[in-house]
Every structure is written in C-alpha cells, then in structure tokens.
Length: 482
Ligand code: ADP
Image (cartoon, rainbow, N blue to C red; front, top):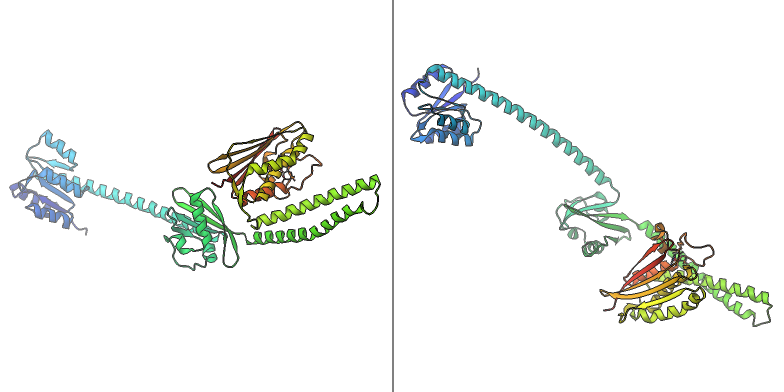
C-alpha cells in the first residue's frame, strides 16, 4: 500500500485545529502539527510534507508572509491558507503569492477535505508533468552529449592522422593540442603537454625564431632545420578567438633536389668557363696570324658574339649561385646615385639608337645603403637594361630614386609592352621569360632572378606593377644606412 501523504498543519491551537486534524486523518492523511516557527522550519526541511495548511496568523506572525517564504524555498509546495475572514484584499494576496487556495469561515469538514484533496490532485499532476519534462530534457541532453562525443572522436582521429605536424596554441603560446607527427619530429613521447608553453617543450631555435618573427610582422613561415638534417617548412597562422596554429611540412626532399640542382649548375658552369675563355682567346688570335677576307671576318665576329653570350650566361649562373648560397658578404657604404651614373653611361647609346627618352630623377641628399657596389651595379644594369630592351622605339624610360622612412625607393618605369598579370610573379623565377617577349629578343631569363636574389640578400623588397600595352614599373626598396 502506498504511504499516506503527509500534511503539515501550521495552525495555532484552536477548535479549528482539532476539527481539521480529525477530518483529515479520517480522510486518510498523515499529519504533522507544529506550534512554533522553529519546529515549522524543521518539519519543512526534514519531513518534506506533501501540502501545508497555514493559519492567517501563526505564532504571532502573518501566515501570508510565512507562506511566501516557504514558496521561496519550495516553489512547487502546495499551500492552503486558513483565513479569518474573506476579503478581496486577501484573495489578491493569495493569488500574488501563488498559494493553492484559501478557506474561510464558516468552515465545514467536507469543505476542508475537498480543498485539500483538490490541491493534492493538482500537486500530483504538476509533479507528474515535471518528472516527464525532466526525463525528456535529460534524454535529449544525453543524446546531444553522445553526438558531440562521437564528433569529437572523429575530429581527433582526423587530427591524429594528418601527416604534417600541427600544433594549436592559445594566445599566450601555450599548447592547446598537438598531433603525433609533431611528437615524433621533436621526440616528445606521450606525456601530457596541454597548457605548457611551447618554447619550454620545443627548445629548437628555429621554432623560437618563427614565434618571434610572427609577432614582428607579416612573415609567417620559417624553415626549421632539425639536428638530424631534416628540414621542415613551418607556417604560422593566427586563429581568431583561440590563438594560433603552426603547421610543419617536411621539405627535406625539396632541399636535396635544390642542392643537387645547384651542384650540377655549379659544376657545369665551372667546367664550361675555361674552354670558353680559351675559345675567345684563340678567336682573337686568328686575324693576327694571317689576313682574313671579309666573309671570314664576319663569321669570326659572329662566333665571338656567341661565345660572349654563353660566357655571360655562365657568369650569371655562377653569380646567382654565389648570391643564393650567401657567399656575397661584401658590404660598404654605397651611393645609388653614383652607381646609377655608370649604368646610364652604359645604356645611353642604346637609348639614343632606339630613340628612347631615358630620364633620371634622383631626389637630393639620398642616403647611402650598406651594400656590395658590384651587386648594386648588376641590379641597376638589369632593370634599366630590360626597360630599354623591351620598350619599342620612341618610348620612354624613367628612373626615379627617393628616400622615405629610412628606406631608398628605386623605381624604373617604361612605356614597353607590359607584362601579363598572370605572369607577373613568375618573371622573377630562374629562366622564366614571359609570353610578352617578341621573337628574337636576346635574353636568358636569369636577369630578374639575379636582381631578386641581390635585393633579398640586402634585406630589401622588389615587385612589379604593370599594365599590358601601357608599360611596367619595377620597384626596389632597400634599407638606407641611417
Ligand atoms: P630576360 O633575359 O628574358 O630579359 P629577365 O629575368 O630579365 O630575363 O626577365 C624575365 C622576363 O620578364 C622577361 O623575359 C620579360 O618577359 C619580362 N620583363 C622583364 N623586364 C620587362 C620590362 N621592362 N617590360 C616588359 N617585360 C619585362
């Protein structure tokens, strides 16, 4: 048999209390009767009554106030008020506080029992509904938790299987997560590294340099060379709201290929230089040992021009290799203006022949740059030489030199054919000649590659702005010595 519901009677001792007690016991309820505030609190707390009946006054206190504070603590507890009189004010208060109802004289036994039964019924309904809602909400929460758990597992599997190394950092460069590839590369074992500062866990200097560089400017990649010779290309990407991610890709095989290619170029160029010098020497001697007819002279002249062309190509290759390998370390105070004069002298003749208007505009007081003067001459010769070579007759070439923010800005602008947009980044590659080059134009496609290497070796930047059919402007920015 179910346990009878317990009702708490918070009523002063009176004939009404006796009557109510008897009636409710007879109706099958269990009763707890309290006579003071303290035992009322205790009963509420410990015996969890199913319903409370409270007098309009109890132990000298307002029953409404007591009911209100009971509902603050147990919002679903049904409470009936025993009023001394029925007034509209009282009815309003009962509604405002949220009591189950109120009874007032003349009190009859059936009225009391009916009111209690009805309140209990409503409370049971409410309880059932609440339990159902809680059950439904819990089930849906459990389902959602299961889903996000399986989703998390999926992401973790993907993350763990990425071949490239991945590290996610918070905004203070503490590790959020890293994948097995990184653990293997840096021999980190399987210790828990979450929350640890990256630079404490990975002490490799290149990783430190990557983090420093990423904070300083827009360059977000760096080569990381490990003790075992492996080379990784590390990329730094900021992630809004989280911090950043570093991805590392093994580029050792590319480095090996590059080294093999450089070795090959170096050997071939070196081995070619001596026979070429010999060829040129003998070609010069030919007309000294006997007279040549006009046709022989012409052929000899063409031979010399071809050998000179190959020699300059070989020299370009050797230069490029030397600059790229970092062997070009000569540095002194160089005046761009001074060197530009030699370049203009060299190309003025060609400009006059092609009727090209060659102009030079150098701002006064241009500071010097710390550079190798031979390389700066090479840089200027290549840019000005190209401008004159590619600009058709009657065009214009303007060389502009200015200084701003401790930088020297060189601009070589021409009214030549312009360079197709899609090829503008490729023209700085070795041996690349764009589709705008008219047939028969001399060149090897090495000039701009050399210029780019020189600029980078001097910590500068180079770029081109060009519109097809209008012309091109090459910009070089070098740090000034001040
Ligand atoms: P090249 O020996 O062919 O001149 P460069 O490396 O100096 O080699 O230049 C690469 C390519 O860039 C050229 O082949 C040409 O297509 C393009 N180029 C360079 N300078 C200019 C210019 N001033 N105007 C138009 N195209 C140019």
